[in-house]
Image (cartoon, rainbow, N blue to C red; front, side, top):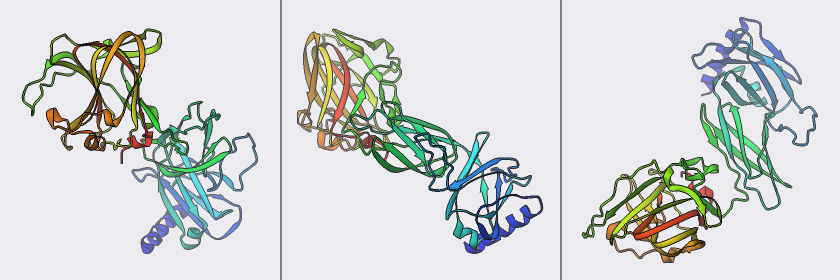
Length: 400
């Protein structure tokens, strides 16, 4: 590897020495250090602006305009080259963002003593977004990126976005009230990266709120936004224990998203099933990927608001050809259409495993959840809203 780096250094040195090289200067170093910047097709990136800072630098959040301990700007020459004649810190960063492409790297003074140069390749920039979980009484946080002047303020819920970031594994500094938290985030070329700060992560997750007819399941900090699927047409369950008739599902379900009514603000989902005994219909949505089911066995309770008359069920399922498919479900009987009630289901309320119609029980399914579904049986009309899982964290939904 050392021979390869030396060979690369010689190539860079020869290429860059054939043209005028832009230079920067602070504290003297023993030898000039050459950097060549190229595009992905190896064409030199000429005339691009690069910035160099101390790797420990972060932009001030209080408006202080004091200069960083080390900062230089330079423009690459016609061969995409620069020459560093001197270096003011042990570790610096170089940052380039140009027309949707960029690079970000650390440069070590130790390498400058060992090698004569290095070659960097521009790639598509990416982006970063996420959530800082705010403690009570704190209405925002600051996200700083070490070695850059990037600084963003979250909104009052802790959400933030940062665009046009070169691909790199960034070190972040997060200021939350009087606390400072160090995190990191890996940004990939052309991709959006999710970077949450979970020092104050809540122990509950609202998985359904029905405020959007297009995306009923939205955990913004997880980047999850799924449209639900539904069978509003009743079906009869077959008598055989191995098989149940599954009705055709549909995703054009906007008609079922209605005003909550009965004194409750916002939207809910509403439908009714027929009076035929043994008939059922359902709504469902993916909460975790088929290839990466979520372990939600830490759920303490599932809480939701409902009104209506009849029998419904809340079911967690494991679906997908790569999984052992099955479900666990708990029944609930509603007795009033005029009043919203807060309903609570505990793991102990889920039906014991009997292997009928895929019922594998809580202990099995809760460790590998892919979907949640809500079903109505026989003669039932109901409204349901704000389904919250208590005892699990948003990070429990992240692909492992």
